[in-house]
Image 1: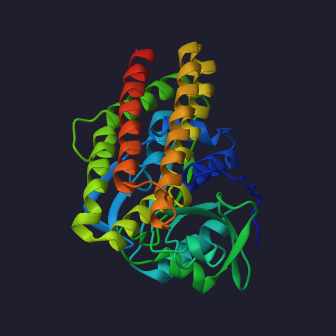
Image 2: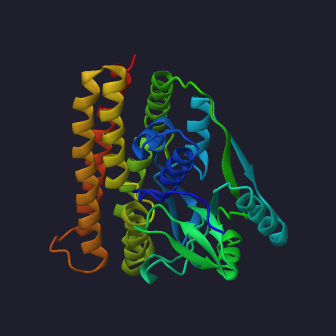
Length: 332
């Protein structure tokens, strides 16, 4: 059983799943537009939560929030279900497939057999689409992959019921209503305002203040925890930023593309200028990742490597604070 579903590769899993599911239902919407309207650009530092034995750093809202906010702002209804019973979760997924409904799933990364080994770790906020089933496998459209793939029945069950932080609990979701007319302009403005509020929030661990807080912590990590642990923390930060989470340069480049689309829709030329600025900030995040990777791979030529990396992150925070203040004014 294979449903009529078109796979489109994307930069980020939740954006890609949302865009692909909506395109399949007749609403042509790009990944950047999903990301921008859904206020996907975010930052939070959670030192009291450990992911892969390092403090949790997220460059995105909680799993599902991007699609939920997008849906609310466009008048779309999504059905979400979580399960405590694996058999029931399998049964309802199979019923969806029988009813020609491609279905989004939140899953854990560790047991995704088609992922390269270096990308498989305990991270439970990945998203993919199931669009069919055979006697042995489920047909998988994972938007971060170039082509479609498969998981065995047992493998899919494992990733749906992965344990740990943000355990997916078999979660499945899919659109059940899309209005004939949507107010894209209003949705874009709401999405931008939400992102500006988040990134300029007066909270120490959120937005630009959160980025500054992490910069401060990086300076202390080697003294507090030793070089080995400090390097592990940096490695985990870069992994979440550029490999799995795509939240550093990757998210900034997606947001720049969103602002370019939004500029045409809103007839606002200032957004095109800000898109270019956001691309430059994305380059800064990429440079930070390169320097941080040199530190934890012991290849840095800097004499004071942790302070150097922290300075780069602090410069990003300062640049982003100015950027989001300008963006707020641009859409008033």
